[in-house]
Length: 196
Image (cartoon, rainbow, N blue to C red; front, side, top):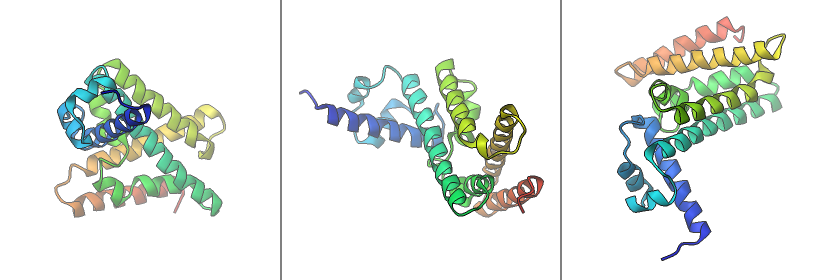
């Protein structure tokens, strides 16, 4: 039975969405093709109509996760600019939120899988690095710095700090401990950046 292009596109989207969520929640290694396809509501055989391997899927899914995170943060920045608020503060408030902390499957792929990706084959690392560069390009205009290189470095430093905060907070045993860690760290970061 031949499927329409629209059906194939919908199936592809379901697979990528499921893989992106599952890999952020459980890590790449713990997510099998069977788990992704079950979550997507499709048969395992349908996988190979879209991807050559799990690594091929992971490359796409991680890229999708980072694009989603960048787009969500960009929307917060757009709103902040329209309201005359600090775009950098909007990024920090968005990233260092309870929602992001407690929902890794919906959050940024950097805090969810960057350590694991650093040990993955280069296509997956390359995809994540490319998305990171997109993120830097998106937010560098809002950063302080005399040169583009300084503004780029400021975005990298900001995201490195926020990823570290979320990653370390997730080591705590209770939601209250995790949130307290994020709130303390966020207030210090805001003070250090002169945003309080």
